[in-house]
Amino acid sequence: MKRFLAHFSFATALVVLTIALGLAEHGQQSGAQPSDEDRSATAPQNSDSTAARPQQRNDAQMPASGDTTTQEAKSFSGVIVKENGELVLKDLVTKVIYKLNDAAKAKQYVGKRVKVTGKLDMNSNTIQVESIEAVT
Image 1 (cartoon, one colour):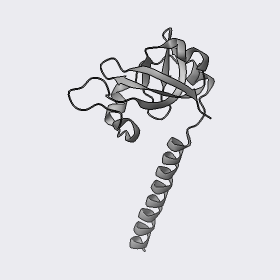
Image 2 (tube, rainbow, N blue to C red):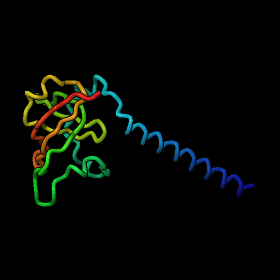
Image 3 (cartoon, rainbow, N blue to C red):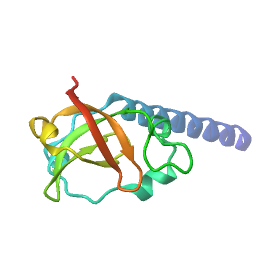
Image 4 (spheres, rainbow, N blue to C red):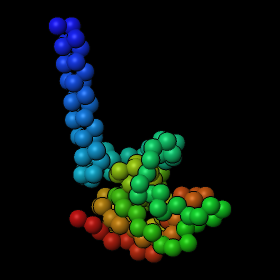
């Protein structure tokens, strides 16, 4: 009987863990809409926590070793928000904040989900904006 209870407890814990991981993965992929708090957030850049987690999409955007700027324009998605008096792109999945070198292009998209195309300067985490378009 004790053996049965031990196996049953282990199986139950495994099922609960599998469901929790599945829900967490689904939540990251669903791209939830930002709340009013997210739009007006003034949190500092989140570079420490993103370095510890694997980043599937952003790894492809990193420049070759030794370079500080991507050679080709890449796409970055997120929400344009005002932070510390500047318009920035906040990636809702990775929580990374990207500065934008051309705030005039971003001004009309404040609070909206967008795709920014440009080259990333790794030293300053700034996107050299080529284009911005709203996404739905």
